[in-house]
Length: 242
Ligand SMILES: NC(=O)c1ccc[n+]([C@@H]2O[C@H](COP(=O)([O-])OP(=O)(O)OC[C@H]3O[C@@H](n4cnc5c(N)ncnc54)[C@H](OP(=O)(O)O)[C@@H]3O)[C@@H](O)[C@H]2O)c1
Image 1: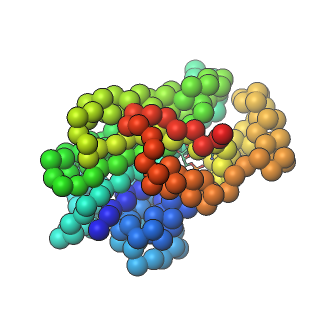
Image 2: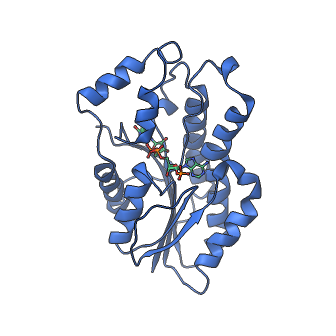
C-alpha cells in the first residue's frame, strides 16, 4: 500500500494531484482549510486545517496519524503544495500578520510535515518521497512578490539541504518541482492585483488571454510522470515549463 499526503488538496493543482494519486491507487490524505466535494475510495481523509496556524502542528500530526492507524505502507509520499501569494505590495506596505502567514503556510508547514514524515518512517522498509511545489519566482525576483519569492526560494533550499542530509539513504528522495503557469485561483488573484501594486500585472493578464495557462489536471499528470519515471536526482529542481 502507498500513501500520499497532499497539502492544498481542496482546489487548484492540489485538487488535481489528489485525484491523480487516488486514481493511481495511492491512499490519499488531503490537507486544506476547506474540504472538496471529490470522493474516491482511496481518499482516506480530508483534514480541514489552517496551515497558517501551524503553531498547533501537534493537532495536525495527530489527525494524520489517526487517519492511517493500523495501515502499513511500502511508500510514503508528501507533496508540499499549499501556498499563498501573500500581499502583492512593497514589503513596507505588507501587514505583519500577512508576512507571518506567508512564511507559516509556505515554509514552516512544509518543514514540519517533512520532518514528521522522515522521523516517522526512516529506518523502516518504506520508500520516502517528498515533493516541494516551487515556482519560477524562487529564482526570478519580481517586485511586490517578496513574501512569495522568498518563501519559494526557501523551500528550494530546503529540498537541497535535506537531500544532502539523506544522501546515503537509498529509500529517500526529495525534489522541488516548478510547475509553470497553471490556470487556478492563484493566477486569478494575481490578475486582480492593481497595477500600482504589481507592475507586471498586464503580463499575467496577457498569459490568460493568450491561453498560456495550463489546466491543473495536465500539470498533475506531468508531476506524476516526473515522479514515476524516477529519472531525477534527490535535491534537484525540475521545471515543467520546458
Ligand atoms: N498557479 C500558478 O500559476 C502557479 C505557478 C507556480 C507555482 N505554483 C504553485 O503551485 C501550488 C498550487 O498553487 P495553486 O495555483 O493550485 O493555488 P490555489 O489555486 O490558490 O490553491 C491553493 C491551495 O492551498 C490551500 N491553502 C491556502 N492557504 C491555506 C492555509 N492557510 N491552510 C491550508 N491550506 C491552504 C488552498 O485550500 P483552502 O483555501 O481550502 O485552504 C488550496 O487548496 C502552490 O505551491 C503555488 O505556489 C502555482
